[in-house]
Length: 241
Image 1: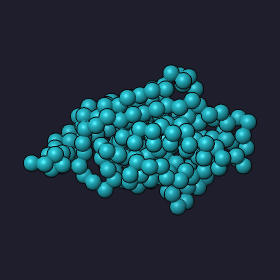
Image 2: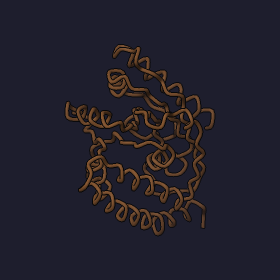
Image 3: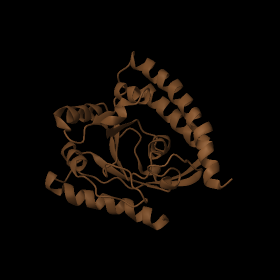
């Protein structure tokens, strides 16, 4: 049996049932907690536990550097490249902040996972019509002192290289005066490639770069800021490819 065939069977008959079990169990705990608190802080603990279980079961080891640059109670906009669906558990487990994700609306249609996202303060965006409701939701999250994690490419990379960054989130960060933290995730595309069911063990690097202050910038600087953040993230990604 080839290595690829082995990992396919392992994914279908072990990983998917195991991850499904974690998702239902911790999702139920998260949803239950949302009946008593709308902040989603216990739900975030459930998400971090879910993330650790997925990584441990799959055999993914994450080497994390740079978290010492973060202030514990400060609100940040974490901006990351997007190589794999594994980026979400990698980031949630590795970054010790209360995180809320901005994700595509279709994720809200998934049983348990979608319900968790909707009930615990995450932002699900229709890419074709984000609208004022989305921005109000984001503003509410930031007022509560929670941090955001954003994938400004809008979709996963096929080969690990970084696509174009959309500027909307950078405009929002500038107008809110929030620090942007570039995050480089390298190696996750080898764990599970887009369009493939096979999942493989592996080593992933996550680099948290120095926060970029936006207090002296205007919305006219958004494109330059997006390019600067992209270059920072890329400097680590391409060095390790």
